[in-house]
Length: 292
Image 1 (cartoon, rainbow, N blue to C red):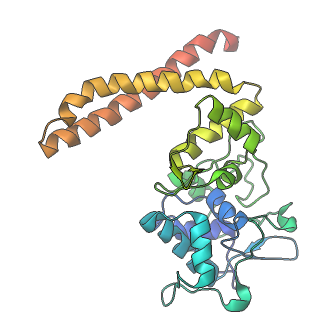
Image 2: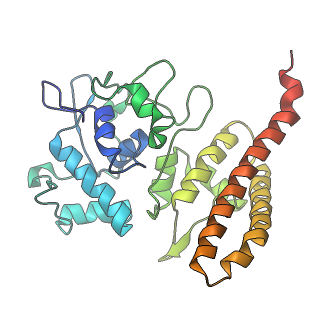
């Protein structure tokens, strides 16, 4: 377990190391996103480094638990924390009245630019990067995961934005988490690439699937590929899914619980095989460009 520095605080990488076992889906991007939405407000060093104390880590645990177990949107969690409806006492500490979460519309503080907490001694970057929930967080040059990043990595690959299953975001939260504009989301929605999960009071909401789709889709837009061309990806995926369903549906219709378990296992196997085949076929189609 990571320990606090001599000054009594933890870096963002060390906090990630503390939370990964209990919340395998948490990432550096997720922690940053929660800060951007005003749910947490870690102190900063004079150089702008994030400083997490025990109460910050406890508050993160409360937020992540509410998302995972109660499927609450972040804005609801924030409101309930501020009103005291969610009162993490005992195991989890609630901020005091003079430390209430900022009501600034979810904007990051100005000193976020140039943020870099330096290496985390108790949680090596290699250990964090090797965890499935932290993929894409570590950099190849050894930079600390709390170092400043743009909406996309320098090599053009999309950022690692992940959302706990069952959690719903509104449009602003989705755009903030993925790092895209509402105009880009409008384009993706107009061609059915990203679709709202459901309607809640007339406002669209989005789940973890929308986040997973929006990250590479937005990267494609910024690479110069129009959203209308991305529609073919969804069409191909729907045809592929239909093919798999034809194979496994007879087992799903059986009343035997074991048949359903077998059908799910077969569906996962088919999905994995399809991913490998798509990659191999695309690689073959482009191979002539990479030949010496």
